[in-house]
Length: 142
Image (cartoon, rainbow, N blue to C red):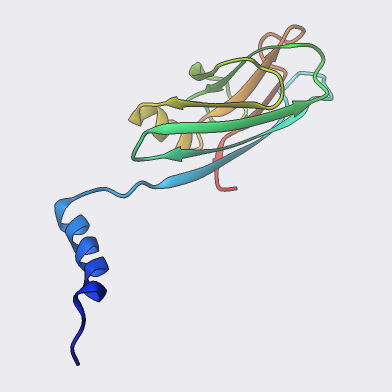
């Protein structure tokens, strides 16, 4: 049986990529359920969905929220921090901060490791609760 050249081309291209070390991007979906931070009385809720591209080092996010006590003043990814613990700002979420907040940022390998390792949270800060009214731990998956 004779194989035609055009049927071998896709396999040849894959073999070339494998042997040359060209890395294929891994896109990791991310999510967080945002609820009032510990000790905060609020009817606020929200979600963060996003993704991280390992080749471009880009982090993308879509944050929605509702029923907050006052105007949003800032939002960030914080970490490293275990669930319920506080951590420093890891990746700022630029404004405007009206829901939904869509954005992206190029992040470092260390920041990606923190986020993909479940050691970060999204925090939404408001006028009445400047330390953060709602927050949610970032996890892999949809």
